[in-house]
Image (cartoon, rainbow, N blue to C red):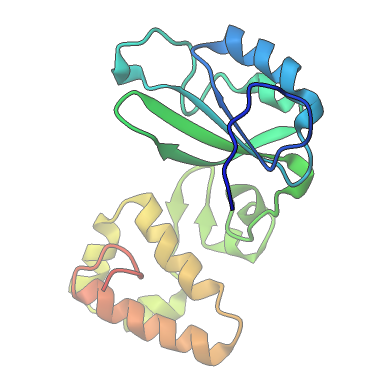
Length: 184
């Protein structure tokens, strides 16, 4: 399929890629483009990295309140080059919440082992029994995120057989010093 770059804004677009320098430009351009934001439109907004030397008031974790006025929420990010980072946005109603997102964990069965607010992980008893002292110490040394990866990997198993296999594999991986259950 051919790619067409257009400066004429008439029509519908599958992808919108917007480059802005600051929040002021973001507000202006979102207003100009709002009629093109369809449910299936892929929207990327690129902004200067703090390390680029380009003055900006936009950042990865802040300054995106304006997008919420258009029912858009960031769902992915990518480094374009040493100057630009881009965030992908989707309409809120098009975003499927994961069972392992912090907001979901707060209200589901994972909350028994994962306290997302205090960032505390409690080992399930089945895993604790399978860990040798070295593996248990290694688990304790892991970051909150790595601990959470192991626990969610085990507890999201849909069948008891799979859960048991994951507990055994976790014990092996932790004994081998693997920080993440997906690590080979």
